[in-house]
Amino acid sequence: MYDFITIDFEIANKNMDSACSIGITAVKDCEIIKKEYFLINPPTPEFDIKNTNIHGITYDMVKNEYSFADIWNNIKDYFEHSCFVVAHNAQFDMSVLRCCLDRYSIPLTDFDYIDSINIIRRESDSSLSSYNLESSAAYFSVDIGTHHNALDDSTTVANILIQILKNHDIVHFQDLCKHYQQYVHQFSKLNVNRTFYTKFQTKYSDNTIAMQELKSYAASIISDGEVDIQEIMDLSDWISNHPDLAGYYPFDKISELCDSIFEDNIISDDEREQMLFLLKQFVNPMEAGCCNCNIIFSEKIFVLSGDFTSGSKKEVEAKIAEKGGICKSGVTKKTDYLIVGGAGSDNWKFGNYGAKVSKALEMQENGHPIVILKESDLMQCFE
Picture 1: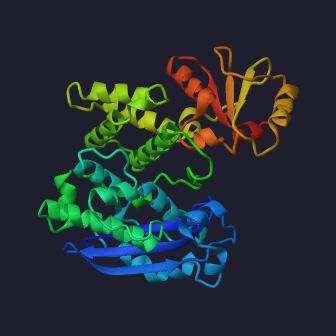
Picture 2 (picture 1 turned 30 degrees about the horizontal axis):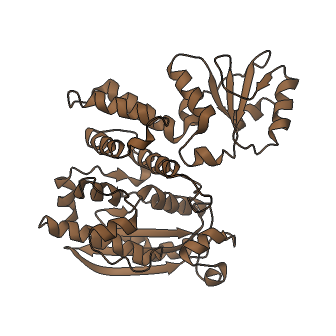
Picture 3 (picture 1 turned 90 degrees about the vertical axis):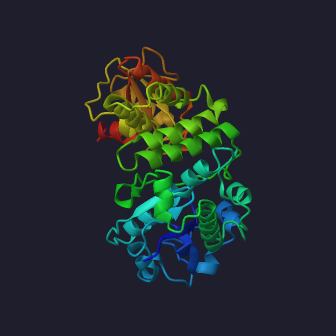
């Protein structure tokens, strides 16, 4: 039984089931005792050039390698015989793992996992300006090797955690988790991301990238359907270290709720539910904010946001008009429905939901009966 393993995936394209490499590092008694690396032949030969520029892997390098389904037989024991699975920005790596398992209909292997970012944040007393792997490795004087080589990255995470264990004269990772009252997540309760967009695809502002980090952090917190006081403390620390995000939805709301909770250092059931709903709404506003309802078209005001998969916005607007609906360009108090395109938009894929969705969510909170719907909900009415 390993004390913990660290894992890292690299993917070929935006689809999370396109794993093209995996690195695994196993640790016991504060020492690395085993490391493995596999190149993976993904389900399709599609390699995004921007992904290849990051990790250096091409289709020619993996076309003769085994698929994830074949490799799983060689690595599943790591997940079944480890106390904990750890990854840096675990939401990403756990989503890749889950999507690969789903892709090949491999039965779910449940295990406990932890995001190393949360431990590093606590150990560094939130003094780092960024918790990416390069900054974290530099802070703990750990050699990162070749960044974005999956084995080097998993080994770097393992060495950082070993350094933290030694800092506290602790041998077993489980004891470190207790020391920091680290919340443990269950893989079976993961809130899965099916696609991934990196900041390398387009030049985004620092605040937009920070909102992406907050979105990933929120997804990690709500993955088990619960929120505890330690998670709120860590979230509050993150919020206080990113004051430039004031004015971005839902930064202010999260900050206000954290302040309210820490007035008495007790999280009530009502506050717990408020925080859970707020984070769910942030991670997926359509799932949290919309309802399955019969859409009324006649003389109702519709606003479209994002990119649509069923046709251009003009084509969708024409369908709405045929049923008596009225399409407008901006969200106002007169808006009845906000329809979010199935292809989304660059803004809200990065956690910054843009003016339309943000305004609609805030209007809902203020009691305005605007309904936020997915494109698929709207299209059902035209079938």
